[in-house]
Amino acid sequence: MIINRAYKFRLYPNSKQKEIINKTFGCTRLTYNYYLNKRIENYENNHKYLSVYDTINDLKNLQKEFPFLKEIDSMALRTTLFNQDNAFQKFFKEKTGYPKYKSKNQKQTYRTNCIKSTYKGKLYENIKLDLENKTITLPKLKKIKIRGYRNLRKINGRIINATISKEADKYYVSVCVEEEIKIEKITPTSIVGIDLGIKDLVVTSDHEKIGNPNIIKKYEKKIKGLNRWLS
Image 1: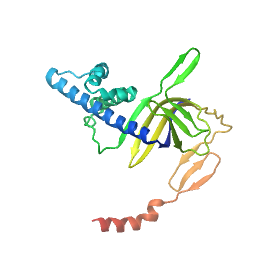
Image 2: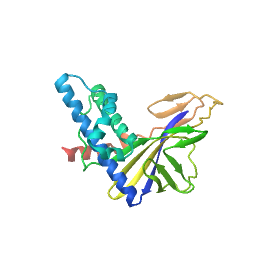
Image 3: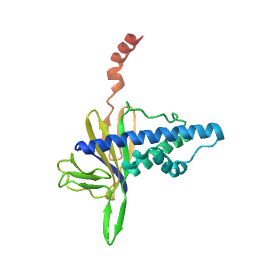
Image 4: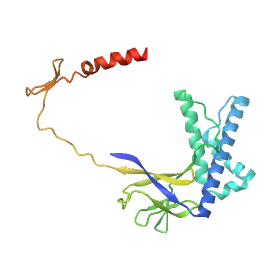
């Protein structure tokens, strides 16, 4: 069975890494708000919504307008546009709240996806987790010291993405990992029938009886008093 599991670690970036992280928060927020406004305007003028791929293809134009967007992890910009599209899809299907503009006062966070490639027989990954040395390698940030899961030495699974966040003056990273877990098949050795009753809560086919705790009767007087107080 394949499951996705998140591991959250405390990050200890140096001053240069903090600068890049904070810049990425701002750039992803700018990108999100810019294309949210563009999607709204396009619908009002043309009665059509831009697709997520329309916004991604237009991203190079935004980077020309704001060259500093090229200084951060490009995957983080693409991911924020997919997050925006998910918010729109949820709005249309589940009638949840309409996507809102992001603010500096909200929780600062961005996500980047793990990309693997092979060159001359060597595997390259943009996200690496080293629990032995307590470090994580992230795009544009390189190695950062982490803390968490003291007794964990290795994660057996494929890293999907990493979400970097800031809470007060502390930084965190949540690593989403795809793991395979084995569920042992249980073969019953016997079968027992169960009958629910009033006098006895449960009576089994083995003639075992479990008494009725009469929870309501036990607290009935207290419930009446609380109802009078509520009235």
